[in-house]
Length: 321
Image: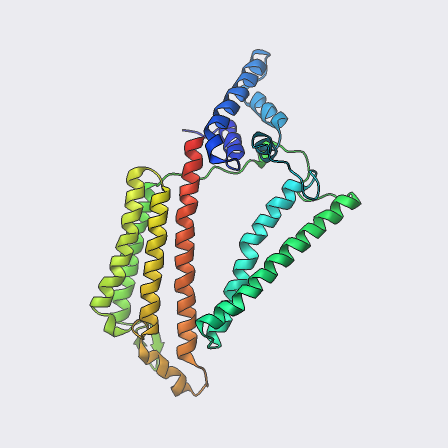
């Protein structure tokens, strides 16, 4: 079924209002738009042109959502509030995470303990959040008081509606999961049998050969568990909050197992550590490899957990529509 401009507009409105109001607001808004469309079409306008004019007159969906939720748009002033909020939310999703990742990786490579890493990351993240909020707000306050034009401050049109995103669990996700597991399992077996790291004229495996076969079974079991959640979501037709919670728990457990294996020297091939001694470069290769590998494990687990909740949220928004 094609997604119309009206559908996209209603979805943009209801996504920012309390969930308990979404269904009622969606029905009311669809009915109001339909009435105005009928009146314009009976007056001789074409359907597409009438739809665009009705949505344009309704205005920015975020402003309409604030009216439905009885939420005032005030901070530095209503003129630039929506632009300020969108930019600030975007930056707060990106800048602190990048800062925390950079500091954590640097601390791990420097040999800091877990407590030392946390102690270094927290003040940096807090400082970045404060500076981001302060400087963005200051810029918009200056723009408002000097009469300058803020980005995206022109008249709202339907062309600014966000593109529709898939909210259900698609067959392509399930097929992609199967392909991904097959490729990853093949890569693990190939690495243990032939190796992926070329050293001293020969190929060496990155993974510890002692993982075969028990460790490999554990790794593949974790991947199959992830695929099982995808299959359950496909069967249900969407990601639910329960599936998102289960996915987050699986991500945490998988990360814990991998980090334990890494710390116990069971994950990475010890032969790789001899490279630093042989090269005489004075590089603490075990610390570098452990830091980068551990950072990657945590990053993938966090992203996987967050992605599950984002899918569940989109699915809930689609139901409200």
